[in-house]
Image 1 (cartoon, rainbow, N blue to C red):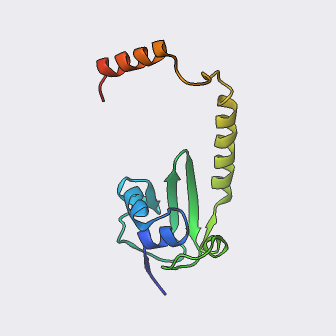
Image 2 (cartoon, helix red, strand yellow):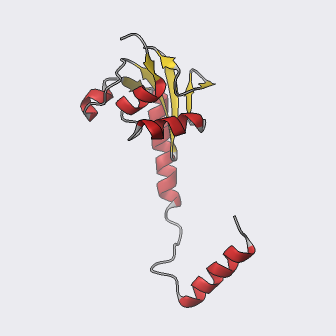
Length: 127
C-alpha cells in the first residue's frame, strides 16, 4: 500500500471515531499536512507530517505506516509517531488547564432566580 486517503487513515489510526467525523475535522481546517490545509480525499504517504487539532490539544505526528482498515489501539499506535515537541507542548498545556481549573465554580443546579437571569440574558443576546 503506497497511498491512503487522509480521512481513512485518520479513522484507521483512531484519531476519530468515524470517517465522517474525520472528514468534518479536515474540512473544518483542523488537520494540516506538512503545514498546508488538507482535503479528505488527499492521499498521504509515509513520512508526511500531520498537525491534528482535537479539542484543546494539537498533535504533530509523522506517518510511519499506512492502513485503510481500523484495528485495535495497539495496531493504530504503530501507524504514527508523535513528535517529542508536540508531547511536551500538550503536557504543558494540560498542566496550565489543570491549574486554571482551580477557579471557583458554582455547585449544583441553578436556582429559580438564576434560571430567570439566564433566560433573560439569552433573550437579550441571541446567537
